[in-house]
Image 1 (tube, rainbow, N blue to C red):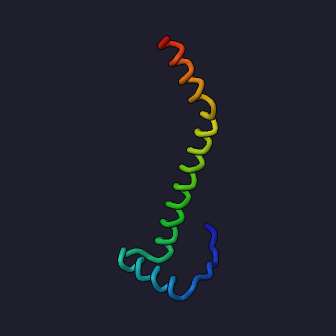
Image 2 (cartoon, rainbow, N blue to C red):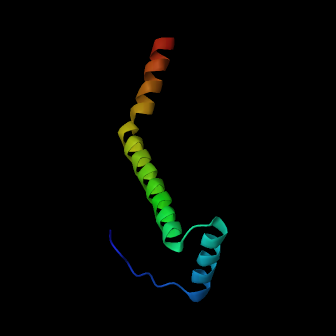
Image 3 (tube, one colour):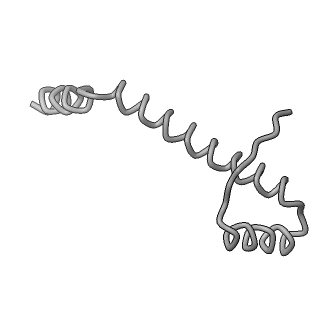
Amino acid sequence: MTAITVRLPDEKHRRLKALAKSRGTPLNRLIDEMTTLMLAEFDAETRFQVRAARGTGRVERGLELLEKAAG
């Protein structure tokens, strides 16, 4: 496991500690959960971008084929 040092404004640190306390979890665990959520969001966005790039141009071709089939 890696330890990191993060510099935060005092007010933000106080609010994060209050949030952790209200959830009944240590501040370290709260930060770990927050980073997990952000990484999951990043991964989902990356997967979406890859899929969108694969589909570029295919929609138009599909519509052309449908029009041709419809006569």
